[in-house]
Length: 131
Image (tube, rainbow, N blue to C red; front, side, top):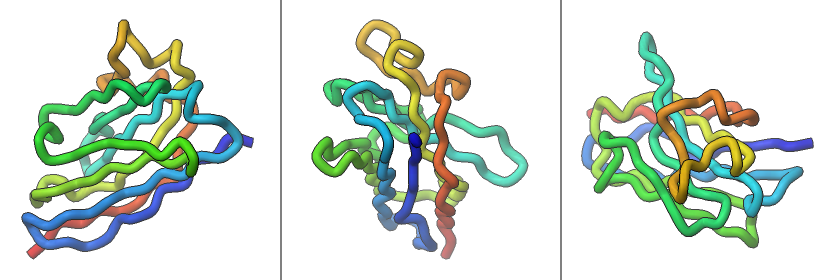
């Protein structure tokens, strides 16, 4: 059974950092694109970042570029999202999701503009940025 479990959310002050983890079970990261999405209250879900099944390419939303870093540990079947310089507007529930690589890769880039290719989702972890 394919499963994703996020952790690492919490309350942080503006300018602070958090590292989210997404542990995958029931499948290997070699075959799947992993994306991070977020949804704030009253807003639509948006893509934040993704990493290809090869682990060699990443993609970021403009809101995340320069502040967030996605990475993975293939031995732990875990994908991370390091979030630095957090802002109030980063407050949201963060989800990791998995898509078979053929569904969410265009040329060498993984797709985060659409959530439809992502078939499997975690339960989410709350990130609150507040002073």
